[in-house]
Image 1 (cartoon, rainbow, N blue to C red):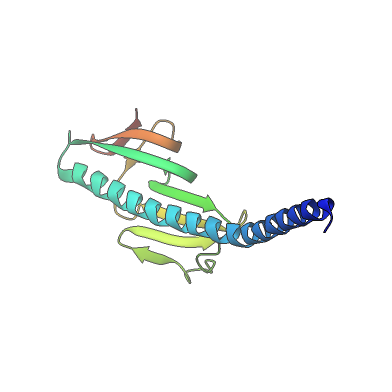
Image 2: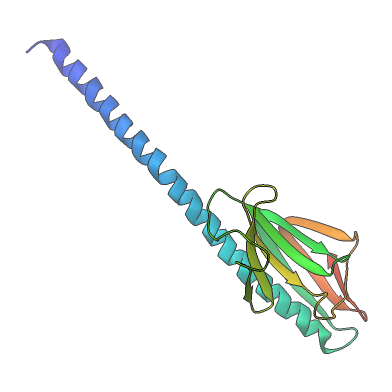
Length: 165
């Protein structure tokens, strides 16, 4: 056997190994991304349910105040005092739900409304609609968009005032 044959074999085995690793990564990365988005979706539903409980605790009387720590890593989180609703939207490639068609494929989980839409691309939505419950939200500005970590002060001043610190 020649001296160069050993080096050629080594290089071929290394290239073959790199090709196999590349194929495995290409096939598993979409699954990992889908699992991340599903986990984010579930965590945000739990977070919004806790926020709903905190808002309802302030209804015990005028002057009642609570702090709530919010951590939104992905998606668009908005508190809309014009429509009296809190909503979160995540654009994703992972099809975790069937798309909303009129009232079909719209799910209620407690006070949360959960659905998927395709108005701007496939998006998962979680909505807390306080207009139907007679709870009046007030924020400055009228539509408050949040991302990352925020501390909310939720205060009952006859209407529910939400301030970000």
